[in-house]
Length: 384
Image (cartoon, rainbow, N blue to C red):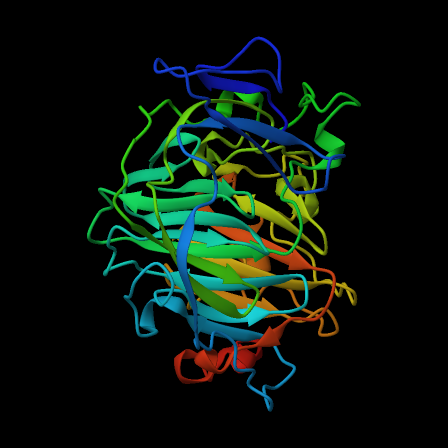
């Protein structure tokens, strides 16, 4: 999120001496994701980064494609998958392509290890649970129904996380940003955007940890996993400033845009990344034309696969859906409301629903995990 932020101590100018009380230097580190031409942050550390004493690779398989998956609308229950695990193994991947991977997770075996995704920005939607996200940049309080946006390369771990927690995770192999059409040429959110900078929660300061006890870091580099032993605690940052850091936004702070007649899903967009957009559906007034049909019309976007993660409420165009359900509607298969839903929407003034939608611009592949948790009757639900 391109908002300048500054925490802790630093010098007035960059790349000059910054000394500790004993006269030794703090170590300056630049963190960026597009060489020296993109947004970045500058951190000042007690210890030299990185000091790694041991590295080994672990063989963990995340993605095993269901080769014979039918090219039809799918409905499956993320909450019925085997759940639990540590910061890595709790991630149950369901759908993926060359630009993203989607997973659900319930973290049950967390320890003092740190985690870094070296190849993907992560959007963690907190369906259930509260706690804290600790990073080198400080602490973000985790609230139910938060989006936690973590740029690739940021090291983090959860602390004080609720025992009952549930996440919907979108890993993006490119930068996660706010939508272009909601920003001016300087990156500021426009007056007609459905949220503002005041809704963005940035890290709060946490005192640096000066510890020489060895720490463990799990690095996920694509589909490879490395186990690093670090000589120092990595949260030794005394100060930082810049534009690149983790941040949070709660779905309840999204202000829906409504109109006289039904508006297409992009009006609900909250994020963009290469190859995909993320939208959210929230409680809102329905269309106010006297003959409006609030339910969506049938559509076929051949170049876009549509994924919906259902959070809460009564989704106006679907029945048989549960909290934690996921539907996939392939772009080359027409889809729309199930029988009775269009007629039932006429004359309705508002709705209560929360859902996260991920639209990709290349076909999604189905992970083998989906097969045992899918709704076999979903394809026939349009028969009435």
